[in-house]
Length: 185
Ligand SMILES: [Ca+2]
Image (cartoon, rainbow, N blue to C red; front, side, top):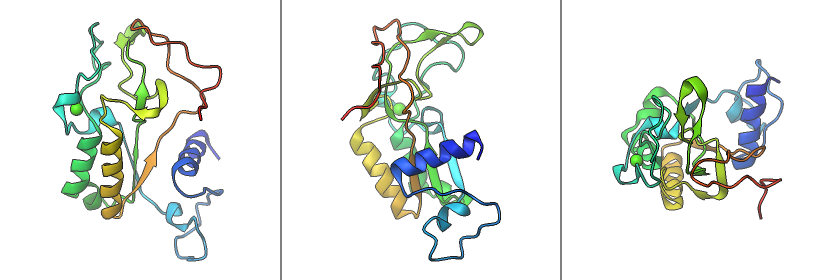
């Protein structure tokens, strides 16, 4: 199993059903196989910040005082934007079975200078600060719940992407160093 497949299984295990060893020859025809859906599922991976802006009021819920490099800051995409696309039938028209969004948990507030890429904010969602809340730049917990309900109503499953092996970096906005273990109860 390659790294990408392993990551996929980790996400599925966390948020949805179990994940078994995959086989290219498997089909979804066996009703006794609890993983049959995933063997033929078409998963649409999207970057929440870059997909659709459903609520311009949250675009700067966290200020960006230092100018980001080109496309290295938050561009405004959010959870409501995903919900709107679901309601419009965008994913169904493509034949998608499941949506995998980049993480929407709260990320660090500041930025980091990344050499040739320039000053970079956590638009990608992979610099977690708090695993227990939704980042206000992406919306609210209620927005996420509504997105999942809407997806299910359109026969779409949702991957809740998580980062369990690291915290976000210390930034110029005073974001603290991550805990020795990111796990919280
Ligand atoms: Ca927005």
